[in-house]
Image (cartoon, rainbow over the protein chains, first blue to last red):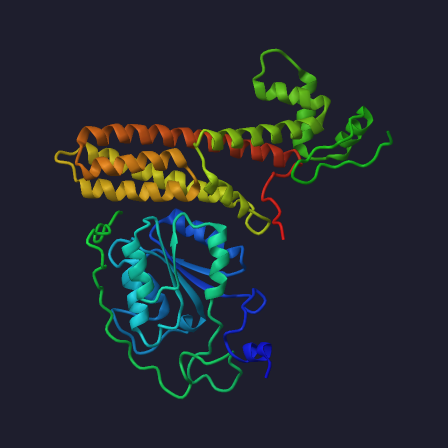
Length: 201
Length: 219
């Protein structure tokens, strides 16, 4: 088998817009200006964008409610990338990242974190927790171009019957989706508070 | 010179033909209300009109030059705002995102920025009128303002916000008051300039011209 057919037979083949014309990105940011900007940036790459203003709403969108869920919404299987702000009131982007990576059902979704603060501690902890990348705000066109390489291929929902999947699905159709581990809001690893708990109306 | 068809198109729109014949033909070609109105106003003439109408009367003579002049004014305005660091390169990023599928993107983002900032500035004014001042809440607001101004490229506003946050950290009441005044001024300045920019763009589009962005990507 030559290299290109090896690549095409696995999910690690090169990803272009034609492969995933409707890649669905979930964007999480409490700033209305930044949500608009991210939408604009992502739409030029032909991505479908859902923008929410909090980590809790992001989890709700993915089918997680009140810290646990027994089944994911179809949305979860259609989200190819999550891009989240770090500093948000209440549940931070780091908490969201951790919740996603702690979840067997959600952990395969690539997560990119954005922040206006260029803090090595913050960056390191996010990457350690499994973030694909840490973007310094303001986000630019060149940043979004790099995101293409993190987009995961579409996956099928579990027990969905026959049909070609594009590769090893993170959720095998042979096992049921169990309940998600209880999701806790973990404190972020930095000593400086990240405006946590300050809710600005 | 033959009366070649000339229609304004492309980023530096405006016709290269200088012959009067070509200009007359152009005026006849455009049924666009804006140009028709301009022609009528131009014929009226008069000394006390505002600058805008003076431009219009010049336009009546040569409708093509009007678009050229407006475009030049737009380019000059953008250039000077960048040079004076009222705006930075992030603003040009926004312009690059505006296209046929997103034809009013810049206006939409900037409008959100205006609304959001006005709300934040009102709340900051209230916070700083209190005694004692809740510096955590003030800082949270300034952080937001800094973030959104950075996202649209309002560089001077962002710079004052950085100073403002420092004053919050030091719980410097007077410093905070000064920064609030300054940030209001800078916000007011960038708002006026951007509104002027949008007005110019509307005039260009109404006159059948096209905007000088987004620039084509080099492949």
